[in-house]
Length: 483
Image (tube, rainbow, N blue to C red; front, side, top):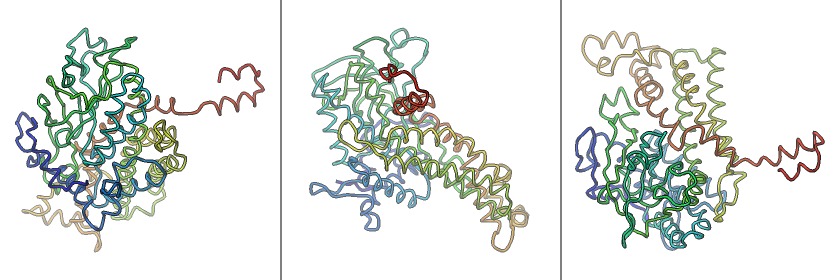
């Protein structure tokens, strides 16, 4: 059944070991670095119970009410429903969050699609995946995924350096497997569980490897230690950095110090073929909500830039309109790829409906690769005042107040306070430590750019272009066999 915000908060008080800036945090729900984003996730849970939003955010099945985000996609309408639900959530919280569960539960669906491969190895693993997919639906847990390992010296295999640089199995027991190592994971400190996935490349020609392991890690399990990066929330005033203080999604190094994964939580183990298959198909669903997030970021950039142009009276200039049009083309390119990926959706190996793969992956590249340029265009349109404007305190206190009121008031409609608010918002969106962190995060959150390109290459059907050129160039019939 769907959870409430308070049930979610209670679930985080499970004795988990969390450190922030060297401090051992006893209750993550009260820590200033994490409380804002936890409050947002709790609000999302509470919205499911709100009569205003319940119809959009939930569905009924088997006498239960469940989150629309966790619903297995079987038809096009399921994807439209998920999109509408994200619209509803982002509109309510008035910002953009990435790691809140709906973007990572799709990785479980990729595992669901890989059951035939896993059945060749051990049918029990396939059964575990089916049980966990259903378990996420029924319990409405905050599910994330454990991303990349520290890796150490990448010129060496893990066996030739500290083996813990990549997560591996150190022992089998009657209860399950014992794993050791570490993973970087956004939101781990305030999530319920994570899908532990391997980093492909820990083996060469090996058929079996202790590094080929995947399963579920519970954040409160013994031996799990969560070390946060310094948070952006609380560093400066909310008036000066409105996004950083509300929407910072804290990243963690999740240390696994001889952690038991019970056999029922193991999805694959030792077989490198299974690990490589799962890793290669991991984003066939999750790329959709992840790319969709950047649609909202594009809207924020367009809105901030256009409001600034309207405030300063520059919105009538052709040069300004052309730059705004560049932002719109970026935004609509994301929109078009997402829309087309639903319209041309494909049946998955497991019988689900996945967004058209090459279109979706191409959309992800468009959204991620062009983001730095689009942010710079938005900076140009917002002007240099986003980096030189004094703090909110200077606008409200002391002798500086009157001077700032004079020079930041533009006309009867745009007084100094609204001008300051817009500039503070644009600075935090485009120019702050938080903004630069988010940009770097986008470039590597699911995978680096070369991996995105590889996904497009592997998903695209080259037979059409090859056959078209074969016929147009009147190539020999014998080349047909090479298609």
